[in-house]
Length: 159
Image (cartoon, rainbow, N blue to C red):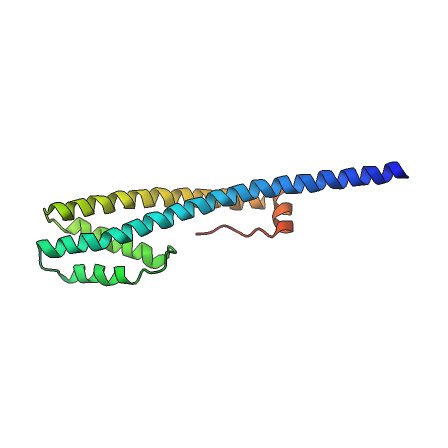
């Protein structure tokens, strides 16, 4: 009888250890996804902070046009560091503005290069974030990770 109790306790400890190990793996994947989200937020913030310099250098070189005012007003609405659909629309408008503007001012060209470089970094980070989220979500659905995620209440990762 005493041996049976010890065997049951040993099995319970092994199962508990196994669940903790599965949880650790899932949390590591989730942490990787959160890291990519933080890098993306930082890059978006850096780009948002570069836009006023771009607009001011444009204003010094030429008279502001309708597109300039549109970019200025769109930039003012981003106080929330969370990437949203508005952020992606702003990105398209900004790149359109940069593509259609041909100013030879050194300040404008520097700001333009910085924004284009940051946009490339943002695109790479969006892809890395999507891949990390997909890896986590797929792993979470697989057996035995689905059991651990249900027990520990881990939710889907999304942007």
